[in-house]
Length: 467
Image 1 (cartoon, rainbow, N blue to C red):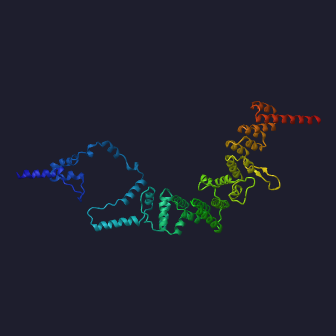
Image 2: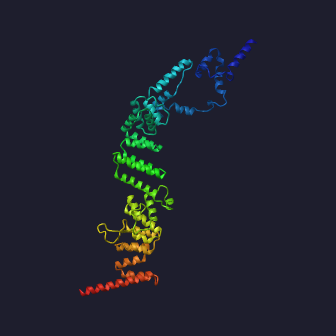
Image 3: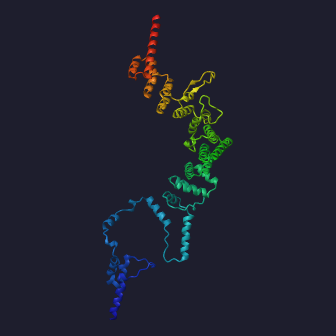
């Protein structure tokens, strides 16, 4: 009876469903040795105990048939997946990241082991591993790089591969080095300097960006950036003050900038004076708060009332403003032509293109245009200028065949007749006369042209007979 209970208790505790488990067990359980240990005194229960371990769970890995996959993996080498260099980096990273503590150590021994790991990680820098982590976007401590040589080597390592890691290393160097050392490193590495300037420009750190450009002798770029910063000021008074300060700084610094930049700076300052002293009326709303010189010139043309004799003492006079802003004659004439034509002030168009010869100031004004006359005629036709205006500009063309083609294109009949007369095309004039409306102005003009052409031809024939 007693032996029966003993066997029952013994069987009860040998069941896997009643087996106790604790995460605090210090000894590792080797499932491969379970059968060997149970053979000592419990040989009859070993197979049941083994089966109970794997059959107790309702869902187990044993329920899946992985024999095919395992057979393939057993014949596949790890070198077929990873190269030796990649495998070495993986093992090195795992050795640094994994902090495995052996079981059964005392708190004092664990503290010593942790100190050793921190010592080896922070004070024994692994240059290659740190660079690889940064290039892959992982967090890596940089404080372990103490000496200037180690920091230079770290920067060279990330520069060789590129990426956003360069900015992180540069900011670390700027934080841990003095200005002389940091700028010396940038001067020796132009690629690092470009990355640093790009970072400052994207962050909007204008002052440091300009200072860095000036420190490395790139004064032209610094001047342009200062000019852009001055023009970006919203208040007119502040913008004018910044431009004046910029002009004075480069005039007294002894650092030369190209003359074109100086002209642009002075022109911008004069433009601010015009906007400040000469209100542009309703046009100021149309051109916006930050107009270009051409837009201001357009507004000045709209306000000008006397095109025959412009007041050059007035800074808003179109000619005076164009001279101050160093606007080319072609741009001035094109802007004035567009504004006067859109305002339908066609009587002022001829005054825009009148010039007095510099070598003979007493001579009367002559027509002079600084761009292609064909463009002026086409633009006036697009703006629906009257035929008389088109004829005025077409009459200034000396090439008769081109004049005829252009006059036909813009449908200026009188200019077509003039071109045919200059080319002595009497037959073509007769054909053109038949297509014109009866008793129209163009028909009378064509008849008079034919009479003049015939009279001129008769006179020429008489001269030839007398000779």
